[in-house]
Length: 314
Image (tube, rainbow, N blue to C red):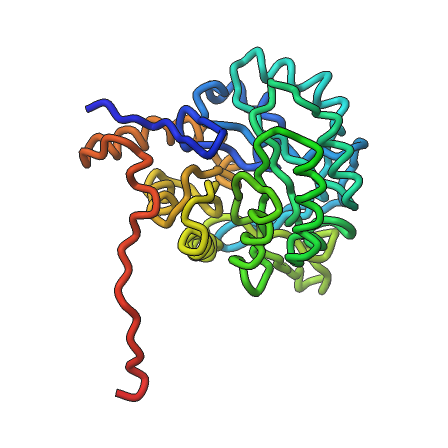
């Protein structure tokens, strides 16, 4: 049977729910030999800043038991070089581009967004307010609903683009942060970014990451990500959600859809298998067809939970 994979996320329409996560897929062009960029729902490019950024000193990545730690430090070519050198080729290849944006302060975010302007080659802007691997910016906004609200309001006033806010899991109440972003003007949410972690070299008794701590990603964080997507979907039933965190198989994709994500972003798995995101599009279609699911969107938010009862003193 023919399966409809299209996704409507507010004003953002995707050909399918398989996207790639910022920071794990370069600018997309690096993966063009491994898959058809135009076949993906979207590509969220490396976080863009108003000036080029060299990132953190090495070592910047280390493997963990079920994923990896990274502290790249948002290295990127800067928004001007991206618009001049990367975006034209992405557009020529038919890619649906989400521009991930970051800054040290509110004015940095606004400056990048204003530089992008109304460029129609960009489908959406994703605010990275949740990177744990920089000294300034990043989680200063993502961990504080009030600071996040102020930032989103300023960016919202500066652009008519679809605005996605990428949330940090390193918070006490993910719903409060999500609500603040939506109330301030976010059109959609991405969750989750990485969890803060530490790995130690016992021979030297030093951190394995030059920044000391790093962002933990991969299969280890998938249960946390699923729980947070589910919580946000329950609290905000109408907001479009990109879900991410340890997705490696089509079953993982479906888990996120059932938990409440409208689409997913593939992250750490791209390092191991650069063609994975492309294959997942076909595998999702086959999974749905086998189970007579006519539209992938029919899976969204269909988790069946049992009533919770307290048996501690029964």
